[in-house]
Length: 381
Image 1 (cartoon, rainbow, N blue to C red):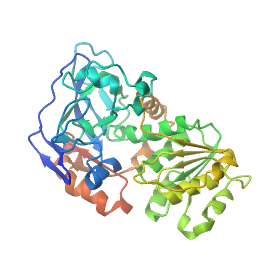
Image 2: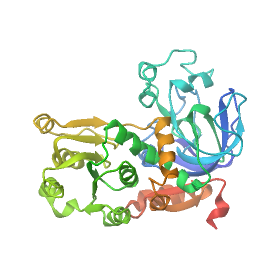
Image 3: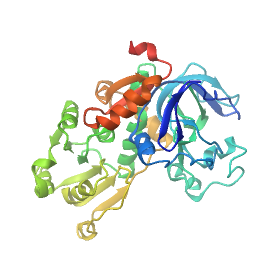
Image 4: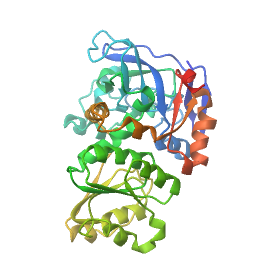
């Protein structure tokens, strides 16, 4: 089948020769992919990887699969085939895919390294997103949504209502990342929130915090284009480049008592944004790191301790996050129109490298989310 695949370090290209998936166990599903978004993680996999992808001559710990593998983990599609024990969905249903892999997938791969083993301690506690062998569909575990079809375990599937368009449905994955971050951070309705960065995750964070009833949202972002996108979602924006070392002080002044925000969500992953988040929150405020870091950072622990602030990390998501995001879109708590602001391009899978990956790497400032489609290309004409 056709797909955009990771072949080796610094080699991602289109191919017509990927094997079509086949159901191996009775709780698996085959999906015809409609749309799949390019994530920052995909770009990092090319620029700095392999990170999640198997290295040359190696295989994934759970699936025992090796390269090449189709990329893509932010996907929507239509059920093509179901195993005989599947009850959650039927052929023809519109679905989204919770893309993580964990111990709950081990039973699907009899040749895998951990087949027949008990769950790792984190999965045994119900923290599948922190699995000791964590990976993703489309990021090392098994072929992903930059291909015509994918193979998924039933536990990773969430059906979507007909009124949610399939292109918007491909945004449920990044929305679930931020939904999970708000839940892990114990966000409370009526609270104030600062978002550091308005890239794809920062913009998704806006939609989630609005749905959860934030009383005030301020987005701090250097790039004017991205500030304008945040403004379209009717939140207050702030340009930190104007204020330099006074940034945190100026941000605190934007709150009612001028003492800082209840919550800060770092969606940039820079030392300067993390320190801003720490200093711009009020006493007993909560700082949530949503970004994935590629390096270490420095901050003064006393800035946390003396104000009894909470600093917490959030990684990925669980199926429940997908279900709650879909429900919020269905109830219009998350606006379909606002979701569309995140989609800045759609491309055929054949053009995914040049007009998808290269566009995002070379013109990051004017793009948010580019969707690739292996099957709905007729909608792009």
